Amino acid sequence: MRSMDHARETCEAFLPGLLDKLDDIPLSELEAPGSPALDHFRACGGPGLVIPTKYHGGGADPLQALAVVRAVGAHSPSLAVATTMHHFSVATLFTLADSVQRSGMEWALLEGIAEQGLLVASGFAEGRPGQGILAPTVRAEAVDGGYLVNGSKKPCSLSASMDLLTASVALPTKNGPDSPDGTSDATGDGDGTELAVMLLPRPTEGISVHPFWKSWALAGAESDEVRLTDVFVDEQLLMRTGAAEPGRLDELQTVGFLWFELLISASYLGAAGALVESALGRERGSTSDRADLVTRLETANLLLEGVARMLRDGENGDEALGKALVARYAAQDALGETVRRAVEMLGGTAFIASSEVAYLAAVSHGLGFHPPSRASFAAPYLEHVAGSPLRLA
Image 1 (spheres, rainbow, N blue to C red):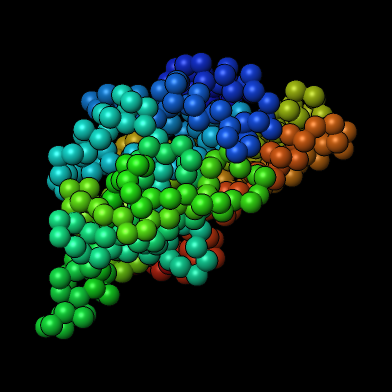
Image 2: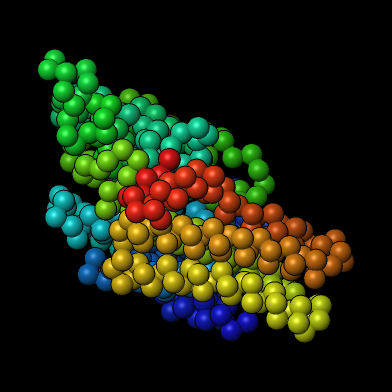
């Protein structure tokens, strides 16, 4: 299929040899705990994919990164999902490195990640029922020289293989509601805290990993619980993200969220594409059925390419995020129908003969579980299209 061929060619250009290595391993092994896929990803230069060349990275722009992740998702959905968390964490770092808020250490971190093949796990809030996606799951207490941090992230992809952990953390402000003068710090979120991003090396004392993921689907993504217990974080390892109104993302969060929505969608686009290619290869269904199948898949791809071009061209504010989420939900719907029809077209014999059809079909539904949920986005989106800033619940 032409678009999948292009995705694989782009992947080979940036991560030479990776897809061949993945092809040599059964899907069941790639998708299981302890998968060798991440080792191959490191060896082929994957950690530096989206890091700009000025920081010694691969320099893939959003459109190229979309193609690479799509290709990877067709060969190993677990690898695509896990490394999406790495890529969007890295994107926040190089955004910060290029901003006026930079502390000076970001460029060194980026070079280290690219040159040493380091994997960065994301501890940003996600997957916690009843909690807003902007609410950190980690809180800090001010101590001499830094902060003492406690909390956990579950699930946290790359939990077994990470070299670094990035996480959003709520820092106590000097003039919160409990302060002597009763005032609130202007940089806080209204409850006596302000949001920051911390970066911790894996060997840091107090970081531990605990079993959490029980499903066989995407088990290779290493999505277990990462727990922080009285972890000391030096002030220099904290990057304050700046003030934002309650429910609104600041510039750094917005850019990170755009990268996340783009690449997590691309991961499932790849998984669905593998099913479509299988149906086309077996020449199942009528000519019009097969053409309709490809059309639905390519609809999702074109929507995501629009987001990638928008991000590449520097459109990364409130309105861009609203557009990206619309594209994500529309792509999600297109992929759901694509998978249903592809499985039906492949037929019962293909379903019975191999577990891959059932596995890819099950995995492809995962996009609907990533934040923000469609229900939580509905009211903020209606307010946004009426002219208000976008606020995410």
